[in-house]
Length: 439
Ligand SMILES: NC(=O)c1ccc[n+]([C@@H]2O[C@H](COP(=O)([O-])OP(=O)(O)OC[C@H]3O[C@@H](n4cnc5c(N)ncnc54)[C@H](O)[C@@H]3O)[C@@H](O)[C@H]2O)c1
Image (cartoon, rainbow, N blue to C red; front, side, top):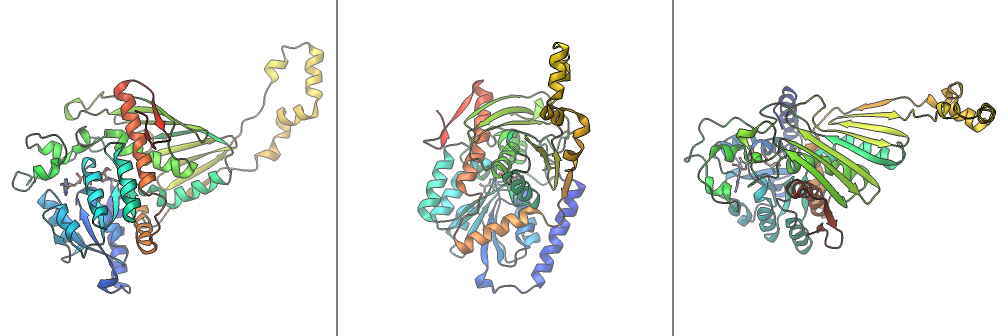
């Protein structure tokens, strides 16, 4: 996510909240859930700040492939955090209860499976998977080990999305058959061309640790710090941004996964810096009875970052992060131009019908227009704090939160279906019996 002025203030607010909760009564160290962070990059630092708001959590281990990031992690969370050489050290450490996996996507499956096998609970950033079939392995491992897996698409823990879900499920906007969602940007940073720290070099960056299961390549700082731009480590817009959109849509619409997906993608502008598209459009059809239109471009940001419209027969819900607007439908029957072409006597008879008069004459509409627009604006803490709240609650109760391995698998699978459709030029279908993409 781009580091905007608003995000600067959000991080400061999180730090203040963490300091306040540190002063509050803390459980004894032995009762706290001990966390290790695998990956201490940009998102991990936001996650650390959010986790530190919870007094029952303690961050005692940090791992990263670039030294500067573990240095900043200890600076952020405190000296109780031990810098570990490799994620396997955190997994072997019996004092660690839970892992937060915040590495590039090509590492997620290996780290989650190893953590579960060692009896740890796992919070894994979205997308849960790099390839769709990995999701089935993770679901099975979570079932066998009885450990908790929660995926980090935090929007669904926001009050905005909880309220929107409630309104849709109560039927406030009637039957929803179309959803539109977009994620647009127009900056180099928004297009993932992040600044590279000036001290990055083979002596501070562990290139082999970063590569892991990815194809071997010579040392390359652009690939290391801007990994989202390359298919070896990322599914681009689909796995980075569409996953958030699909998770929200699944949550609000009580839906699992699309039956069919068609998509097109092009690299129009940032050609020197990537091998993934900068413009992506996709259509998804759900068996629950609605269709979705997803779009993203890195070449214009006139619409908000992450915005949705749920179009229902009785109204529309428009969502941005932290904002919700309900507008009732004002659609009216109007057959004047049709009946004006009928024989005059039939037209007169048409207008004499009281039912027609009630539906079509503007003088009768007023009573139905009382239900005006309603807006909802969320203030207060970041959804990530509450998302971690769900994770900590699950660790305590041993009951997974809604965004478990299966939900994470299907949200990521939407992205993989989009990318497969772009690559093959064909429609991609879901195999409901196998709970995976039809091969
Ligand atoms: N939920 C959200 O809103 C959100 C926002 C941003 C990123 N993310 C997700 O978080 C993850 C990380 O993204 P980021 O923006 O922080 O990227 P990043 O490049 O800033 O951080 C990734 C870190 O992982 C480290 N790393 C790489 N291989 C490693 C290994 N084998 N062991 C330990 N560390 C390793 C890198 O050195 C780097 O510091 C991605 O999966 C991304 O999709 C989620």
